[in-house]
Length: 227
Ligand code: DX5
Ligand code: ZN
Image (cartoon, rainbow, N blue to C red):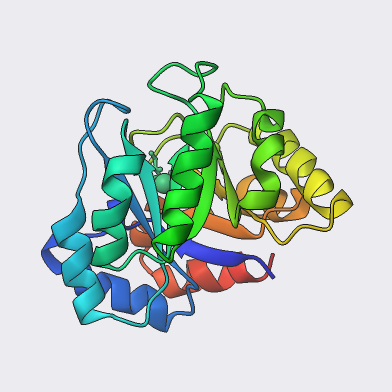
């Protein structure tokens, strides 16, 4: 069964706590928290104080923090202190795919996040090959495959993500690692997105608009859980 991490970017921010509680009550394993700085991606979302409030209201939730920011090293500590359970950052340095962070920065950031007591994820944008994360797999708790260009909810799923999920799944299993594979962007409870990702080997399905835009979000979470 795939785990579900509803993306709070698509929640109604006037009742973020109630929306978060609703998806947790519906069985969602995590809350996906998309942080955007207006530099790494052309959008700004929410940051540390909102996570702190959520964590105070719902202290037992798993906070799946997805940093789409230029400087994850510096901001890891405030997000960890605000309640992050998992902190995922991007292997890419900025908006361009294929311009990757240098090896020393990746190693230092992974180690720093672990020392802060959080799990660590590394993410790849649609234009970055899955193999770029292979050298770090044994240090990671999760790899996040983006199935849209990061920056906005409600975009269309890019099916090229399926091959990347399958490649990562095969490599993680071949090496007997614990690392989870998560997929994010354009996912719903249909065969072409949610089911296809789970079949390709994804452990965690992120879904924003498909959950919070639905008349019955609990039914969407239940449907994703069948994959
Ligand atoms: C995009 C974010 C996603 C987004 C997913 O930059 O990382 O988490 O909120 O939203 P949907 O599921 O609507 O594509
Ligand atoms: Zn995300």
